Length: 611
Image (cartoon, rainbow, N blue to C red; front, side):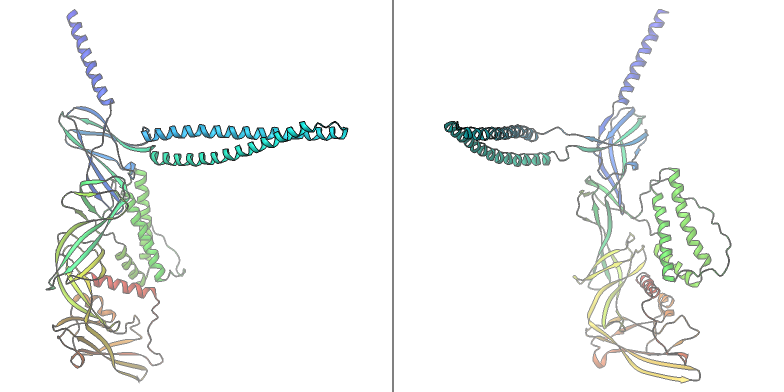
């Protein structure tokens, strides 16, 4: 029994020691910093990943990850561990700390203390001089009446009065001299003190700073070395695409240099990191948006008409903007309350949009289609850059190359003589690169020369888009009115016009020209009938042109202009049209101040630049 009790006591003691050792290991936090190894850069934030090595110890570990950047989003912290590592909790804290004073600061403190003593002695000396002057004032106040009284009695002691007067003036002169000296000395002390204090302030600026740390509680189930990844969002950074297009001499390909302009002011440097550029929004929320019922009711007819089309477009864009904002905001929602709140905001905006679909007419539906096209969420793209990238945290922008590619292209010229005599170069390019191209500014070069700047739309892989390559100075275009007749037949008036479109080519080689003109276009087809007359050249048979532009009165020809076709040899395209309408009216252009017309033009241009 005794041996058994001894064995039990030894076992209990060993268990207590093991427990105390484990408790001590868990209770003693380890301070680490790790290294930034991966960064996903979004348009306004970045997701930073720090890799932290873990020792080959088993059991509970509390880590304090310090030196987190100034612009960290505190509630975005999360950690990831490999096999055998369980993340128990991740916490964020910010605390103020001080720094040990440096030798320069100590010397300045000693000088400031000594100077402060001198200033105090100077002030005491000035006070003493003031008291001496006050004493002389009292002495003169006593001597003058006494001398006057003695003089009236004929017993004045002139020698004593003279000595007192001389003493008073001598003292006042000495006091004045000392006061002037002390005042100058005081000003000098104050200037020196201000200088010392300014120097000290410069040296100690930031001595009291805020430290941002992550506290990570983990459980290691295997006694092997491992790594922990700490992730967090930072503000103050983002990127935007920019391009340089260089056309080859044979005009068969265009070299595309795709770069990213980066703003990096997160508060920490990214050195040798794997960088990913993303157009998505950082998503830390695991919950999607729920769909609410779309409730409707009946209302009486004859209510006030809806807003004009221009105002309607603004309203619809505002509604879609609120809906997209709610979706983006939900990406960082962490609680059920936030998720439900964002979901309701998105549903409320969708309700307003669907209401316009119920009550709107033809114009409203066209506006809805246009707004949907403009406000649809773009693709979420990511670009993994090859090799390690280093980006310092600084105020000026930095640029890195994303990729280079040679895209197939078809060059031609575009002439619009109703607008200008200039003829522009244009290329129809196919994105056969391995990546999608985001909308962004582009710098264009032709034959090694800069020709201008522009923009490209977002282009998916395999999609075709148009890029302008500036004016070709060796081609000219003009538009001539060849004939005009105006006749009345019965109750109708018939207006006929014929035009001549002239293209001159001063180059030796042949030029492919896309020639554009237009007919009068109206939505009042029952009142105005426009008929295209005879053509010297057939119109383009491009399917997209026929579907999008031909129905709106746009005329387009694909022609060849021989080299040296100038003056009498210029390339000419002729056409005419006839407009019929009520004889009591005249045909006139609709005022161009309509916002609806401008929006329609913008939509056509967007469609034209992207096929």
